[in-house]
Image (cartoon, rainbow, N blue to C red; front, side):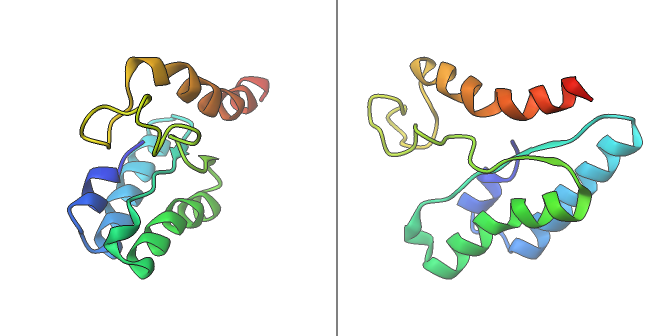
Length: 112
């Protein structure tokens, strides 16, 4: 569930990818299973940056054979009753939806 803040800061995507890859490597080297929680950024960052940011997680998933939650905030983003006033962070009421977004991927690991 990392990388969203870097995207909101407009960080170069290559740097973001390298940082995430370093964390994936460190996690795997410690024996942890990795599940990437994909994020998206608002479209006002431009279609190229927004689209490349979105596909970054799928590319890292494919490269590392990690689990992937395509968008952690699926069903939450853009819904004012589920987002805090900043429009970026979910409310307490959104947590059950996040759980439902994450649980299928976690269950895959528990079955292994």
